[in-house]
Length: 123
Image (cartoon, rainbow, N blue to C red; front, side, top):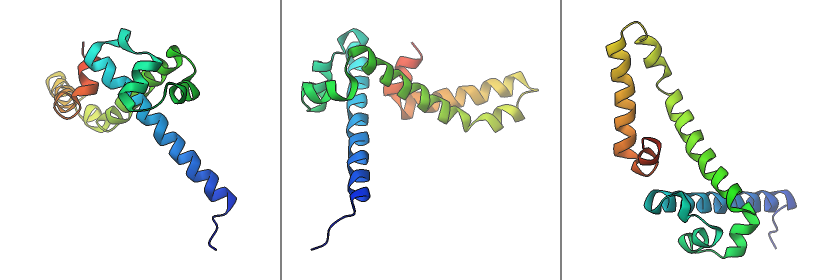
């Protein structure tokens, strides 16, 4: 019989748990985009994600914690992607028009490729 070492099994559970938590946060973000932040509750996220209310409560406990996780996800994404254009911004620092063009390209990319995030961040 081929048994997984206990550490490997725990890592798999941890990875699955992290993935499930991420799915719940994405469900919350879809609700925010579609209906606004007031529509987010543990129950609406559970329904959106096809999960149980208890599962959402297990990962977040409260609506506030769920909202914080959603905001952290979006901010982390923006910080990471914005970091990629820093060299371009530094190169354009002495030319305001070129600097603005770099920022405009970045924002256009987000509106086109990530409307679910860009829409809320630009309102």
